[in-house]
Amino acid sequence: MKNKITKIFVILGLIIATTIGCYAFSFRNMTLDFIHITDTHITDRASTSYKALGHSKELLVDAVEQINDLIGLDFVMFTGDMVDSATDENFYNFYNILSKLKYPSLNTFGNHEYYGDMTREQVLDVIKGYNPNYIFNDTYYAFTPKSDYRIVVLDANIENNKTSMGEISQQQLQFLDKELFENQDKVVVIAMHHAPVEPFIAKEHSIANAKEMTDILAKYNNPIIVLSGHYHAAKIRRIGNLVFVSTPSTVTYPMAFRHIKITNYKDRVVYDFDFMETRLEDIKEMNRQSVISYGTLAGLEKDRNTQFIFHKKKHKSIRYKKGKIKNIEKESKTSKKEIQKLTKPKKVKKQKKNKKEKVVAPQEI
Image (cartoon, rainbow, N blue to C red):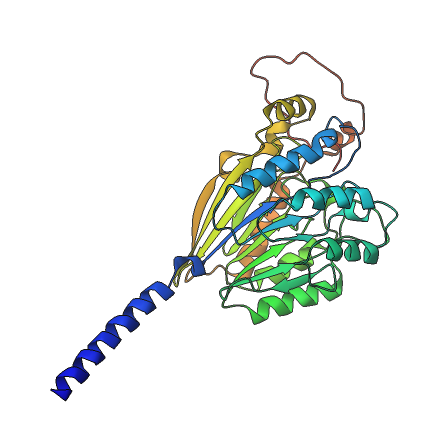
């Protein structure tokens, strides 16, 4: 009788343990689900032909409302130019709107965070004061949101030089290399304002030593995704295990941000990109009519809504990846004449039907 009772308890124990084990496992733990939003340019300045600055706050309010409607996000990442210039008022207005955001947020630093009278240290202190999630002591940092993921944030702004161009310090390059070396078993998400692989060529907005960064990335075979803003353009480029994602601004057509979901399986990684545009259609249409080459900023459908799978066993050589990056730079070049046109006042001309749209860099970023 005792043996029968013992067996019953053992069986019940196994059933309970199995049941608990089933519920303890969750696909949520395999998935990183987050928002990439950038270049919100919060300010009280009037709008320009390129940026709807006069509507910057209401555009961010709309974005926050849309994000709050989503279920189960892990965090929201702002990749710089949160404010149009570094002033107490602009930061207050930005974080006042973010106080309605129901998910935690973090940020990188854009060149506009360095426009103004504040020093780098003062800007960092202001952000740490407003955002309790910003527990880092510098403008570049890394953290692990889930066991299979590592987030690395870089700051390519040139200190004490208020310019649109970027450069990654040797200290940060070493930091990046160390992070990638120590996390080869994880999916690595790199967030920064400037783009190491440009969505279109605009040298005055590029990273001077971008090749040093891409050479480091090419050494590793684990899934690596690089998120950037700065160009106000939608572009997704994949080179083997490397994915370069440029996301538009909320104040320039198409006035959008991204919902990104990455699922890390044993043999593959699935990337899902969902393009979320502002619902303020009148502001978007007004801006579309004033910007040059709005089609370039909006990108192709594959640059907006897409899904692709990276199979972990299919590695690409360092030489292959470096060659691909070089080819992208050649294919994306705009002529000097086209860039020079951006400095001249825009002339209103009657467009002929079926005339192809010229691809040019935006006049201000």
